[in-house]
Length: 165
Length: 343
Ligand code: SF4
Ligand code: SF4
Image (cartoon, rainbow over all chains, first blue to last red; front, side, top):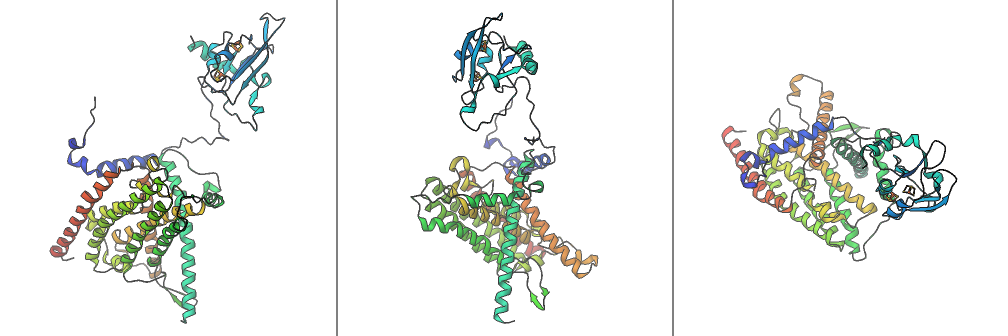
């Protein structure tokens, strides 16, 4: 364990400060010639890992139908009150489907609670971080914008299966 | 030469120097940003123009297009005056700094310095001490406590460090026995650079120069975490740009002073022994002066992005209990040099 040195414990050389300052200067000089880590954003885009929480999206099955059964749990748990679900009946096996599913992206805080609470794995966090709107109305994403084919979300779903308990 | 010719030539020289200086300052800001980026593993500005070389102009136009806000509680006259004092001091100092030897142009003999003063060093010292008024006025007239604290800190800091600065210079003057920059440079022939002869004086002078120009690690007047923007918290638009300009202009002066007083000015050791022709020697020497100044400027920035800021009491401690005695010690050392080695 290293103990913190007080001023009175410093040796004469350490009190001079100059050697330490030179050490610091050498370090920064070396850093100047190291490779840069800057990503030039619009041209180079950051590809987030599976654990990344981008905008929440609805999983669309291969047959084009959403997984969601409109149980309303996500809407209930959302701390920002960003989700609105309107349930309706369907002939399909799952019996219920969301007639209307809206997420207000101005309210969403990307906490991922909706994903965590969903019993059907129907809402997951995507890797999409480019969210730009010109007005408030266009910030409310309906089903048209929320539905994403399941193939595109495989990464996140695998991640959830592995770590979500 | 008639009086009109003298006036016109001087005006041209002044114009040239002002334009040159503004350009240098603009690119200093650019390099400051680049160097800070490199030190932090970033690329720095690279969007405006080739490798971001037009960035300074973008910055300036942005600043000029901003609204000029004067706080309601401010003392309007002083609030306006302050940046101009700072600017005036910074610009006026350049008058005595020679950029080169005398040249012949269109049949006129032209000295490449606006005013050839034989007490140049004293003139620079006097003017840079005036600079503190700009900052103090700015702090006081803004009618804001952050600005006031920044201004007060600045004046206290500048006054404290001026003492050790003056004493360090005394060592140089003792050796060269002159106040003229040219004579001081000539006295440092060969490797007799003052930085080598009196290292303690060199260190105290450089440290004081950092404090005088309000650069990190001594930028307490504008310590952002404590004082928001310091003395220029309440400034915007062109007046803010004025302070910005003045700070960088002061940095250039400080670098030139360090080069002239301690790093042998335009001298390249023993260049006259190489038997090069006259023009080439002069060109090389001007190049050497610019190179040394550029290195000092780089050093200023390098230090800024490497060393954290001092606490205020540490700053005062350092100024009065360390730098001041050290500069006195330096004078004793120089006296020993003169008495024992007959320099
Ligand atoms: S991520 Fe959080 S805030 Fe956003 S919709 Fe889901 S639960 Fe609501
Ligand atoms: S928790 Fe899942 S299944 Fe229930 S409404 Fe939300 S998205 Fe649909």
